[in-house]
Image (cartoon, rainbow, N blue to C red; front, top):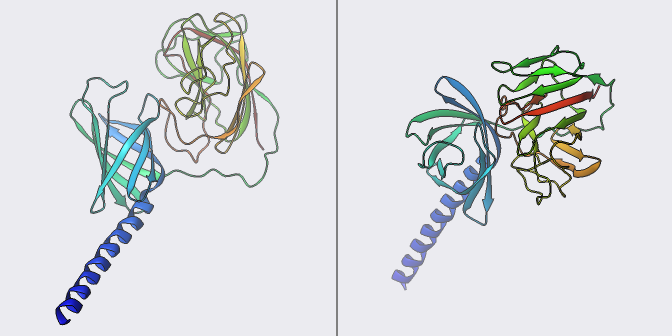
Amino acid sequence: MKNYLKNTGLLALLLLGFFSVAYSQAKVDAAVEGRWDLVIEQEGKSLPSWLEISHSGRSTLVGRFVYAFGSARPIAQVKHTNGVYSFSIPPQWEPGSREMEFEFALSGGGLKGSMIYTDGKKYEWTGVRAPLLVREKEPVWGTPIQLFNGKNLDGWKAMGTNQWIVENAVLRSPKSGANLVSEKQFDDFKLHIEFRYPKGSNSGVYLRGRYEVQVEDSYGMAPLPDLFSAVYGFLPPNEMAAKKAGEWQSFDITLVGRRVTVIANGKKVIADQVIPGITGGALNSKEGEPGPILIQGDHGPVEYRNIVITPAK
């Protein structure tokens, strides 16, 4: 009987220790769950990126990751050992075939980690928790602003060697080149913008310079998160509203906090949906700050006109 009681007590202590460790690990895991705005220091540049971590079942962590370019990609498993987390993802648009490897830990309320890129080089990165951007009241809209005056590039700046020209009140990018950024920055707003592209071309409109609404020749295709009117890599449209290439088309976009509504060619294709995080090609990952309108000019020929923004007061 003494041996039985002794063994039972020992088993109870072992189980208590196991559950204590499991509980402690669960608390640590809960601290890393959520969405994080990242900055990767790579080759002298600060590259904006994004990470989401969530639980799957009792003991598995999964996630999504957005690099400086490309779309959000899934993370099958985020592994954790003694407070150190790691995951790997295959290349998307990066050169080479080597997987990208990440390792990180909690640090002062944020994340601090490293990345081994597809070229085998190691880079450091930091992350801060992404703001919720919840608005307590409905916006009161201000006075509409003509962002493009139809005459010249006043109010805009090219991010590189400029190929944009103005002809007959149309803003044209005749070939792939620099992106175009508005000098004014905005928080919440309503945006009307019209565009036209040749067959097979591709562009995009970045809200606050961080969230791309895709402009792409997608006529007749099924709606997908990387085609016409999608918030790139995150939110697909509920139907494909694209016209044929060569026709003028329009977006009417409302952005309040993270909530976005997209009306494409008169059809509401995204209705008051939450944008999880920055999309590839974002200017930065400072989601809590106002930002400009960015028009993508590095993917193909495109034309824009009648760009009107109505900011919230």
